[in-house]
Image 1 (cartoon, helix red, strand yellow):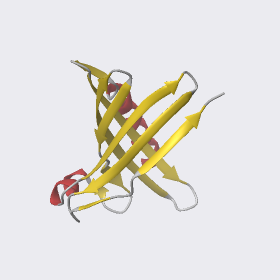
Image 2 (image 1 turned 180 degrees about the vertical axis):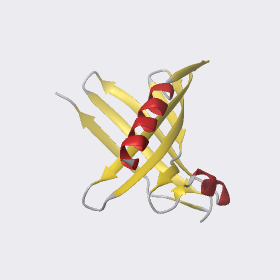
Image 3 (image 1 turned 30 degrees about the vertical axis):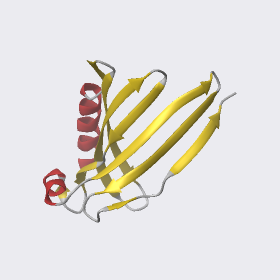
Image 4 (image 1 turned 60 degrees about the vertical axis):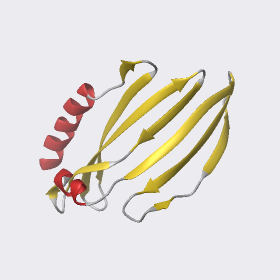
Length: 125
């Protein structure tokens, strides 16, 4: 029963959390993800706020993941403010209509170190 209530709350929050044009090429994109793992019997909910900036055709992004709720600790969003965040940085550039280039990395402010740099091309057909 508790899982159904959490899923309903997540659905309501997800409808209010959506892409928002802030002007001057800035966007705010937010995803709320509720997940239930049936074999483990575990339910989690996270929120992923992401700030985007368009320059020409390239979209630059910076975002993070915040844990909201889990079965073990119940409400966990207040724990997120006890440590420094990890930010995700990325850029997406459409090379052609069916070819996209994406590069990204992370930076952990708690450990004071950069994560793995990645670059990929995606060909869609």
